[in-house]
Length: 525
Image (tube, rainbow, N blue to C red; front, side, top):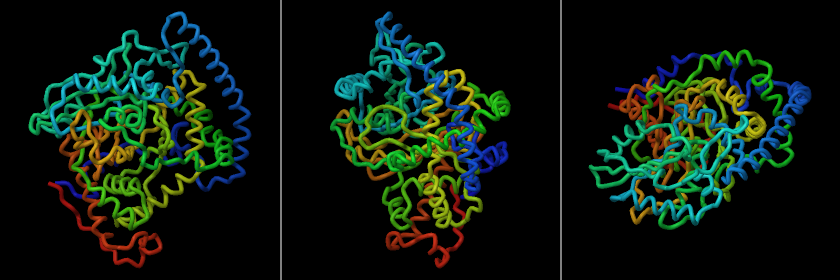
């Protein structure tokens, strides 16, 4: 039996090595340490001025090196008669562990009926022909090295047959979790790092399509927009509103974020290399790490929406609060999308924001949600996220891959990462090969700085949670399923408390006037 607030996941996470709060962030890809709210602006501005004096020559030198490599790459592509191009900055970040036990982003789509692999292949060919040319080019390229930089190189004999494979049947969608966990994480040499597996489900006459894309190809929204949307029987238009943090800040705040960038990253990148090197030698991804996968039953979107309307929170706020309250972990990260509504390319347009749990978390679920929402709103409206995204772009653009590995691999890991993917714009009755899509959910990647991942995918009229974790943290799929059940129960209990209340009535200032009782322990057998 597992109790809300004290699942095994909580106990294992709390036993992980804790590091001083001073070392809140250890690299340019996360919110940097040493830049708390208590830091004087004068000190930050002064340190930025001094650091830019050191950083600017290094950046300009790295940029000149990249230009020289790009020129040499064009000459090589001409000589070889193959398309080659430098890899964009945010794709390079995920290449530091390519083919080194770095699990890809996975999408599981269940179709209500039998589907043949040949039909899927034909539909993929059609989608690539009528889709975005950039997506078509990218899916026909593999990752290669050239003069210390990562590049995209055209496959010599690209064929969809190499990327759409049929697997033996699984009994049901719960056994499918074990099938996905056992799939190989590496890609054959000279092949683009993506694959679609066709898995019949024998107990229900349904078919599961498992999309596996290495993160260097794109993030979850990039996969949906770049390829999956094109596979459907009828194309869809965008109705979702993505987080547009960069565009909302305006030019002056973006320039200010760029100015503060050295101040936010100088401590961890330049001033403490010995500490980062020590961490690098300690933290390794072992190939025998066993991954545990599980997904939840559907959660009605009306349940989450009711909480959202009553509290003024977002779907992501409710999801994040539920996960953080149940797992009770100190260090977490959440994915922030910087993608614009009009962007339909397959790329990485996200950054990861590090965050701590509330200093004095309330045991009450409603108060906890309000506290976390206040914290997240401040973080999203700050210049930190933009400075961090710019840091990723600059360092990944001008840094050779061997040095980028040093920067990425030395980042201190978090207890878990959360990500919310909105796929409702695909429509509640979306069909593929004349079969209705009965379920659709993402499974988070596994890499050095995202070892435990919880995702919420909203599709149609429901949402589904998925959990990927190391076996050292979550013992087996049953324990993972119980953890997800506890998260769902937390959301349902919060829904029962706010049901019937007028929209936006419950605010932080109103909480003290509410008759809030301690929620009873909930048992999941």
